[in-house]
Length: 520
Image 1 (spheres, rainbow, N blue to C red):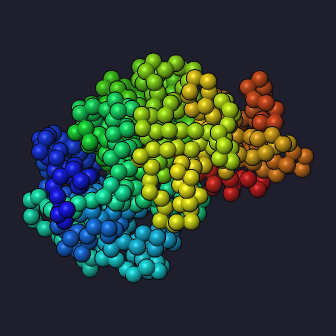
Image 2: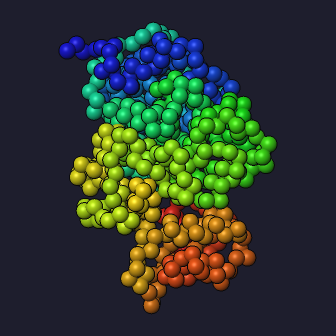
């Protein structure tokens, strides 16, 4: 077999060129921060230039390119360019502190590190603490964004190093299991794990999403996830590009701007975490914004409260919950046609190319029983860079999600919470997610997390940490829960926060809450 091919074995590396051939003038990317619009022909030319930059820097098949950046076109260039060159893209969170970033740099061991200029000082501090050999560093200048500066004069820049030649590049003959993305998990416990996502996984997740969600070639989606997590690429960005649709990015999230983008761009698909969906409904522009173009809205990254879902339904919008994780998918479930509203608290049924089961110690449980959710799919990740952790999660042939779930008699799956969040009170298993779902129906509670605290009589009991009206009393909660929850599930302690801490893409940081309130 020849060393290079322009055929289908280029896998994701062939996509931008094929899109440029099939739909050259269609807009694939909109940068809402600058107003720039990029056709597929332009995106492919940019990717060709970026591919030549990588090769000039010595990056070839199997090498690694790390990036510390907000969502911007250069990150898209590198996604496509690493696919073309057979190298792996490792986007790293710009929200991490230098010691945390240093740990990820050591784990990824990149050959090239591109850094958006606002994050160069912290990144250089991280590199000074890292044990791995310092990679080549390129500054991505952010002078086009208000309030940000350019790279220091002593730093080589991405723009200056970018070759002018934008003609087609030779693409290596890649194997399906070659790694394309190294994506770190949310990092709610210790240093995030780096997950190896192969070309096969990217392709299959995209196909699965297109088929299960009914994506179309005219779809437009505003990206609400950061591109340093799987949500930024695999939830909807890559599937929409696969179909030839349009993705809208921005440097920062602002609910008013997002609502304006939906109306201005005629967005048809929106996927976001529950906190973002709630912020949109709470915004002053919610009622006035024209949302009629939205065909599909999905919530992911945690349970979406019933009150939030009803607010979207009142606007005539099809909002349902999804489920995924970096290690598998991330799109694993879909709501069947004509699903009843009584199933709104579920994530639906396994998608076309996904097998799911609920187990206890590796053995399937009875219908309705709670156990650990395991998934099997061609879009599962290859594993973690840490092989010992890989064996625990991927070793059985199924992906052990660490999430507790149940499946009802109709085949709908319900996520009951994280396995590590469950606690035992008086010999009874208590699932915080169930309690939180009930409590958020209270009109004085905006958000709530239930954490276990030690109790002399019962071993552990729940403490409700509430964001909302701090005139709420424990007696109010007990009264509200009567008839809704068994007595042992009702929280016995109450605390308030002005705002919930977040981890990853606007996800509530349960670990931080537990550390602060679990010992009080």
